Image (cartoon, rainbow, N blue to C red; front, side):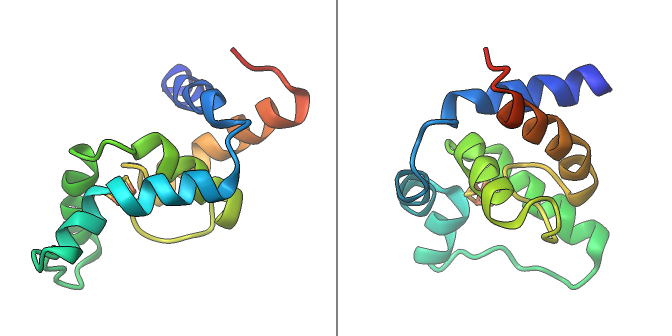
Length: 110
Ligand code: SF4
């Protein structure tokens, strides 16, 4: 599993030099959740953490800017935010975040 998380962290290297505002624009313009909300088809969350997480993961799975979204989330909230961002739930983000951070701090990028 740690290899899987390392691969996710490495996959974000491509965004390392992309400015925050460019990433935000991509996420807000092309994010699947943004499209659904704008078209009045917002996912109906039930308040149950497990089913809501599943629903969010399904929405994210079809999103073309998952990487940009996860990069923005790590830059702005670290791993402390709740819910599903960039198709990862909190538990997975907490596993990927230190790997992502280490790659940025050491400049060890692909
Ligand atoms: S990855 Fe998920 S939370 Fe992020 S923009 Fe796409 S649909 Fe929204």
